[in-house]
Image (cartoon, rainbow, N blue to C red; front, side):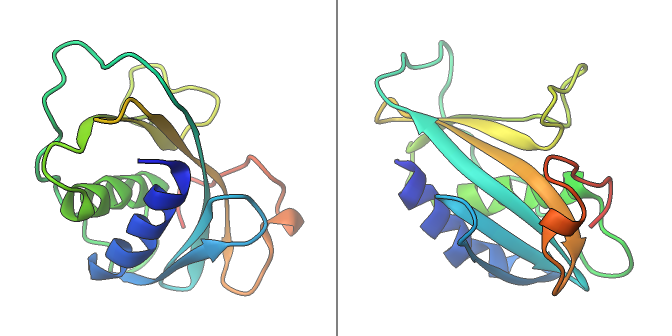
Length: 151
């Protein structure tokens, strides 16, 4: 699975998650995706590396919990989980070998929200939250690389 395929899968599958208003390509970044939940959006970018070694002991991610994104403010970590739920729902059996969320690590990386995804065709994909903003406002106004705790 290459970055463009992951982008399309998420655009197609995220609207099935309760509370996701829309998921669309985000033109500001190659392979970007904008996920609208309620009155706010989170912006994600997808990158990848090919010809990586398959992770040891990885045997697929299986179904993922679907977060409830309705109501008031939604935690960005819940949108992160929605990405994995959409990935698991849309990927072919055995296509995704492993997916690790950043926000659940004991020591999250500098990109606090995102995931590393290993696929059966030896691609390692990285999805990272670039920022959050109210609908209709560009994240450049809020500053890049400052994803809020809530969307």
